[in-house]
Length: 122
Image (cartoon, rainbow, N blue to C red; front, side):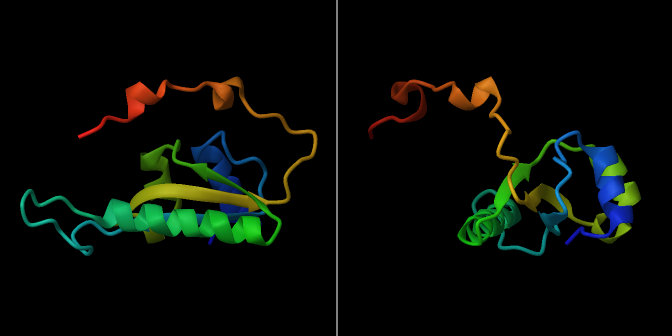
């Protein structure tokens, strides 16, 4: 959890998507410590971390809080400013707080792909 003013200020230096949230939950994994798929040696830590991030998102919503999944951040600065996480591959910083009622979604939130571009039948 990132919640001290000092660390939240550092978070603002690694991403513009901080939203001045009073709490950020850092989600990541240590490569090689999760299950490795045998056939191609794919580290499934990213899957586990993504499931954890989704659970955080749902828990925040259950509490009436807003939550934004932020994966756009400077990874080098993240390792410098948050040495506790330097061995981790960070997946997201979950920005949590009360939503601004005057906030508006970016236009790309409304852009949709055709179903045929996302799904196919086997």
